[in-house]
Length: 257
Image (cartoon, rainbow, N blue to C red; front, side, top):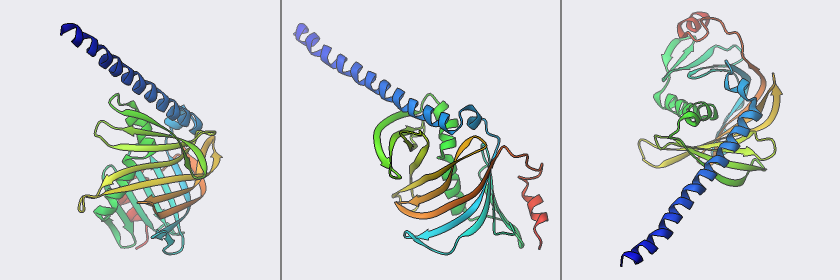
């Protein structure tokens, strides 16, 4: 009986070790895809980027169809948690997302943004490619899974999913030739209806700006329906911004009442 038990135990141990080896090999492959993506985006210069300024037009969609015309916008982001967006040609509607707080400044003064809008923005920032690479990837508890090749934006893409220590996940698809990101996807549970929603961004029309490959078309999707499309005109990196640039009160004083 003891011999029988010993003989049966060996295959189980070998199988467990093989599974661990395969998982480690898969994680190494996933890491290689992400490392190649970072290198393609600009390497250490991209990782240590001070800020980015984007301006262009944004179009809203409802059930996949254009809702209204495009709106001029100017967007500024500074890692890790400072975002400012200015709308209209006069730039007289300004939205701030600083830390976990959202505020808007108009000719009427300043006011908190609707909580649903703030939650949506913070969710996307928390699951952005920048956050995933700079935060999740540095956590040893994050699980990396290489899921093979898929089609994304009519390009063959390598697909990697990262699972955080909090059991949050983000899937990134990168072009197999250029290694640039093509699509970022994550899911979140609706606090009211408890069903899962899928948030996705697709990146296209890359141009090299100040040495950084930059997508000039960004499309956002919710549950496979397109909700926003951004058409960039200018992008600048590492700008010297005014000392009070992230101050909501300073913006409030500048906008004519």
